[in-house]
Length: 357
Picture 1: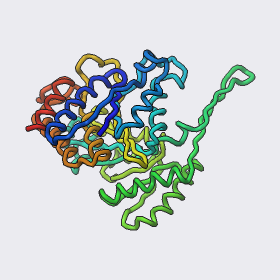
Picture 2: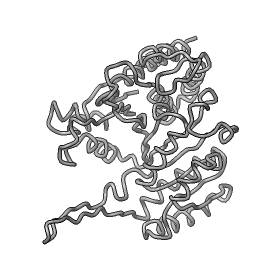
Picture 3: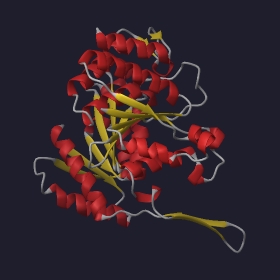
Picture 4: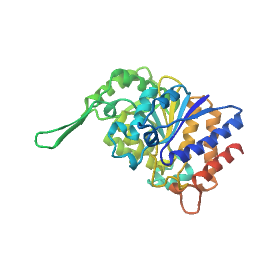
């Protein structure tokens, strides 16, 4: 079982270190061995090689069973051309690995209801929403151009493109996942305005005939953004295109209380998956032992579940996190009155201790 590790930039280095502690504990508890190789991507890769995604990184990742990523980016590289910025590495590795479905769970832990921006009564039944975002199509990957007009001003455009095949493959995945959960799927689009959204509706509606046991609903993205705040518990699985998914998943993250609590998995047709916390590199707190490693540790649980079929081990990690939260330990981003604040290193140690208990 081979894992490519990409610490990346900022707090990415710190949270990946804690994830490796958890992997060590899983090796000890389950008598398995993970072969790990660290590679460069993002700003650190630019500094060392001149590009955000070196060919060697792509080679190692493709030869691995899973890729675990920390975070990339930072102000230091913000003024570089788009194709040379750290984020270009992230888009590039997704494309290279052929991972087209991004799974982002938004779960409110009972212990952290008070950290949510919503009133507790809105979350009285808990929250477990899974956003499935198409990852390598749409306006993020369509033709982009900027031209200067005769009057000296500029005109720019990004092209939103989707094919039936691109929509079909992620739709089947979404229905399969919904079938294993609450048998409820919501397609979020803008079909009243966008032709690409109308194609999404047609394809999803056709495929839904193969899943008669799954309830399918449609919702415009502006309404979905509102409903996620008004009554998030009405959702179970949300399927949507790239940009809408990017925005809605970040919105959903604040319902949970912190970006530091949300993992993600990016999957394709093969076994290889790309796993990462949804937070950024947070250069303002990098190197200060203030980062929350729990999203990265939960990404490890997703990796064990989806890439290695180690369901019991994944469950054990999530139970260990619950134990730590039950004891009142919190990183700064989820701290509340009466709790005990700990740093990134200590939180990682506490999860390992609970895991091996």
